[in-house]
Image (spheres, rainbow, N blue to C red):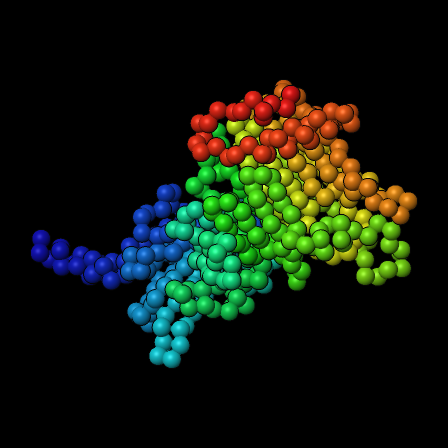
Length: 421
């Protein structure tokens, strides 16, 4: 018996020194590792695992060994495992952070996993991602904030509780973003405050989606100022979710300023066309040319707003408004029309569904504002165009609806003024 225990002793000592293993395919994962979530193109799911220091030094993906913190890393200060996953393929990016004598050292390892796991490179990962990685930000719960999203102070402390920006940082020591694959394409989305009431299906309310790089938040007034980015172009917007407000911080940043319907073909500085699919039925739509406010709850009504964002001058903006859940096309803009934003008000549990499309029409060298209204009745999939007089009534009703304060609890009863039908 003593000999048996002596045989087990080396393995026990090894496990004690190496820490407990984690298999990323386990569900749920064992306690001792913080998990942060995000998304990327074509339904991709992003996940970061950040174990408590000393808890684990070995990671597996099924039978494939991903990471072992070896003896050379005995002075490690932090490490991360990042997973980029679609149905057919997974990329795993490991980072071990150690303190050297003169500087902090970052050891990166990238794997591509299909049926087997092989070493890969940043170019392959960048092509696989095919665009930004969007990280979730809950401004009401700092414990869930991704390590790359840093809270900082600026000159607006009196107006905003905190500001948030994408930084590549480990244990408070900032590393240049260019050290990470496709890191310049990290964005913050969605943004929400979990302290607000949830919907009947337990989704957060007043959720903001977009190609967001910077966020300032006033929790008392529930207001945001956000920067959105596409390539090297950036726009700044003011957002007040409870009132359905999304507004460019200046008229020069509004879509109308970049719409050039009367531009000639010889103007090389004006893009000829841009296509946008605006899906009012899709949850979590993220598009670089849209800033989306979703799930603003008013009693048993839910309000959403899709704001069109233009970053450069363009002659024709082809906007198709659809509801993918109903498999229906609601509206497609003519060549002389710019859709600036779309509002939707729908009663929960498949009640009446109203869509208001706000446009600018170019005619005779002038631009005129127009609103087109559509309704989908319960039990149907298709939207019907309102008469002009009905559109005016619905616009007035929506404005009245948005003036109602956000309820203090999810059980608050609807106000009679919310009835649109």
